[in-house]
Image 1: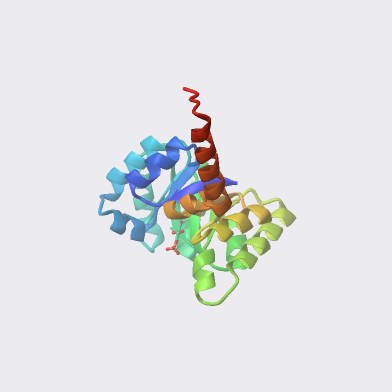
Image 2 (image 1 turned 120 degrees about the horizontal axis):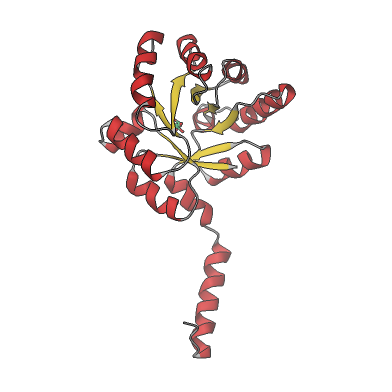
Length: 217
Ligand code: E4P
């Protein structure tokens, strides 16, 4: 399963690139706001830092303006993946660019039938939001399993990009279901390292090593 990083903060992305954990990045208008950066400038910096797809989201909600915004966003770098909302105008924009062989990520997906529409529009990625589903008492991971079944039934090539991940179980369950990608906030990536037995085991090894009086390098 690929790891995309769900942030527009360069300082959060760079250390994860150095760990080899970044297969791509996703941004959205809220993350751009949080970064305090200009969308074009920060997207360019992220694209330079990361080899994989970098999702940049349109701000418009109508087809004509989305297409104009897309031209600007695609022009930033070859690895820009256009992000559009799951609306009729968004899917029309998706089809327009997918037909030209360009990457499109369809976002704000909350049902398996919406995911079916995005696949038929030629989306490279569908972004179902698991955390926001959980927030209203639904089972976000059940949605991922349903989309996996549907896409496998018809051999759709659209990749399932699990979004709105909030904790390590979302990542583990995504991998068990066979999602193609999870987009993960940096703090959740760091949570994945954590296990109390790793911490206590390392502390014991360090203590015992000191007692040997040896050095390796
Ligand atoms: C990513 O593509 C989504 O926009 C993001 O994961 C949404 O996460 P949130 O529900 O925590 O805002």
